[in-house]
Length: 447
Image (tube, rainbow, N blue to C red; front, side, top):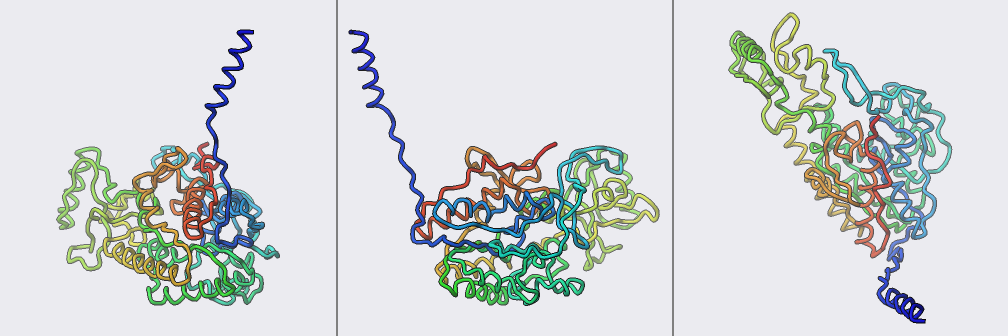
């Protein structure tokens, strides 16, 4: 009897001390998520690893957002699915990148991004169904308003976008027209990155959309999207020069490991009448300088200038690019301008981005939309953040957030980005949409 009493007493004690777990109720707040669409560029489409492919689309930021909104009653989210893990097939299209072994010009084999060769999905015919994801890789802000932007007949003229050709509702459609025809009640928009990114990717040889024109276009897009009183959030633009595509190769990546090499290079500089001195260890690369009064119109890179990830690595390792050509004629061999961003280029990019973000902030307020401050969030990623117990940063391959093209996010990065959007949605509309569990999504996959 005494044992029974003690057992009952123990049960009563543990019952009384049991921690109560609060029930989390998903609420849409003042938002209407009944029909959700997304609109924007490659960051919206699910482009990753240098290509648009099936798995990348499944992990797209909008698709992950849609999954969480469905907990609050949102409907199905349809994407223009690519039926290949290798990419979309059209002239000039690349294969998806994966981590794999490759051998350089010195015969050294190492692990790095390599093309995954296989059958791509044919560009045409059009998918033939209505979609919710209006992300178009390569699109700038003003392309949203361009009629016939998905017209296959204009591809050869460069007046249409192959990715929009896949799902445009008619040959004459603009992206905005098709998005408006979807009659959404809620939207997310991430647009404008390419208005500065294309300049950066070309080494400052493309153009930057003027802020005045950018503001007019973005206002027009939002006017159309909200014409049926749809609600939504809009993202601002991160500093594009902070992504791995521009930060992986250092400006002083010319490493001279032996004194004999140092002596040879310094002797060559004296022969060329160039006032540059080199030493053991890291040294700045040579780049073109049309304004220079020096012979060969070259100069050394300075701290803060950037080398693009697409710079030909074998040309640098074996043929002297960035210093002196290794084969006759053995003359100064600067890195070509298309692989470099100078301080002047970077200043132009930062000025334009700041102007764009002020415009976006004002438009969000005018249209009563939530603002996703991706600029601040991505700056935080530079120094590293921890989410769901996972440490992430903006390092190429190892940082955990970016895909192998150094520009777009990997699945885990997309999950993180989805949470930034969800946070802005909840703040703007008083909703309680739960965050995506980023631990369920992979980063870069190692072989």
